Amino acid sequence: MSDTNSSGSGVFQVSVVGGGIAGLAAALALRRNGHHVQVLEASEDKTEIGAGLNVPQNALRVLDHFGISRESLQGIPFLGVRSNILLHPRSSNMKQAVSIDNDTGESTTNRFPEVNGLERSVGLFCHRADLYEALKRVATGEGDGPSVKLRLGAKVLSCNPEAGTVYLNNGEVVQADLVLGADGGHNSVVRTDIVGKVQKITYSGVSCFRAVFEFLERPELRWLTEEVTGPRTFASKEGPFRMLLMFLCRGGKLLNFVGFYDDPLQDVEDWSPKATREDIIAKFKGFHPKFLSVLDLPSHSEILKWRLGVLPPLPTWIRGRAALVGDSAHATLPFLAQGAAMAIEDAGALGCLFPAGTKPRDVPERLKVYQDLRKERGEFVNIATVEQLKHLKSRGAFGRVHTVGLDRLYGYNTINTAQQCYEKHFGSRPLAN
Image (cartoon, rainbow, N blue to C red):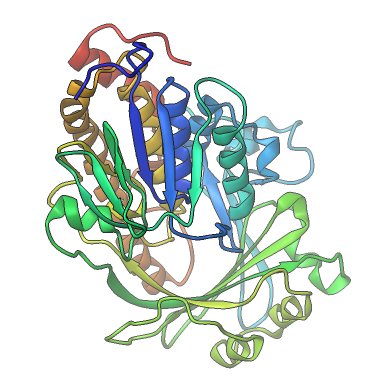
C-alpha cells in the first residue's frame, strides 16, 4: 500500500462505517487534517432519533475544538439559577437540579459540588437531531480539508481489518488506509470482525419511555421553568425502581421526557418498541399527578420504550487498520450523560493522533496508542454508569456522583491529553487545524 495518495500530499483514505453522531464526529476530526473520508451509512434516509440529551463539558471542549458553535446546538445551559446568573458567577459553576416529592408535589433544589477547571456551564441540554445536524453540516460543508462524503444506503456486510477493506451488500469492495467502526452498540459488523466473535449488549433490567413534546408556557407547567435550568425528577420512594426525568431543549421549545422503571425481562428481542401515553400513565400510577399535565402537550416525536443495556468490556478495540468508536466500543447506560460524550471524545483523540502527514504504514501503531488512550476511560465510564444506576435504585434520586470523581468525568480535556500523548510517542506534533 502506498504511503501517499495520488497527489503526494501524505493524506490517506478513511472509511467510517456508520453515520450517526460517533461516525460523523470521527469523520469531521479526520477531514480537518486533510484526510479523505467517506461515511458508509446503511440507512437510506439517516435521521437522529427524536430525543434530548445532555452534552457535558468534557464533550463541549471537543466540539469547540471542531469549530462547532454552541449556538448551533440550540441548547439550554445546565448551570445555576436562571435569574442573576451573570451577577453570581460562583453559582454558575454549580449544577442544579430539582427533585419533586411524589406525595406532596413540592420541589427541592439540589446543588452539586463545583468541579475544578470547568467553564461557566457544565453542559447543554440539546436535542440529538441538533447535535447531529451540526456535526453533519461542519463535516460535509466547506472548511478545512476535503468534505466528508456521506454515502446513504451503503450497507456494510463485513470488514477485513488487516487489509482495511469493507464489503457492501451491492458487491462493492471499499479499500481504505483506516477503517473506523461506528456502527452502533447492538449489531456492529466491524466489532465482530475486530474481536472475532459477536459481542452482545447486556440488558440492565431497566427500561424507559422516551418522548419529546412541544413545550407550551402554561400555568400548570410553571414548575418546569422556575428558578433553575437543570432537570426535574420524580422518583419512587418504595417498591420497584421508577423515576421520571424532564428537561427543556432546543432553546426551550421542546421538552424531553424520560420515564425509567424496573423491567426484569430475560430475553430482549426488540430494544425500542413503540409505546403510548396510556402506557406511561399505567406504569407511573401513584406518582404525583402534576406530571400528567406534561402528557397533554403536543407530541414532537413518537413515544418509544427503550430497553437499557451496557456493552461488556471488549478484549480489544483495534485490529490491523480498523478501530472502534462510540457505542460499538463502549455502549453505556444513560445515567451519567456520557454516551454521546464518549463518542465525541473518541473522535477528538483520533484527530490528534492522525494529523496531516500521517502515512498509511503508521496506522496500526497509531491505533495501538488510540486504544491505550481511550479504552480504559471508556470502560471506566461504563462501570460508573452501572454503579450510578445502583445508587439511583438505593437513593431514589440523582445525587452527587458518588462512585466517580467529578473532576475525572467532566474535567477531562480530550484534546490536551491526546496531543500530549502524541508528543510522548511520536515527537513534535504538526500544527493542528
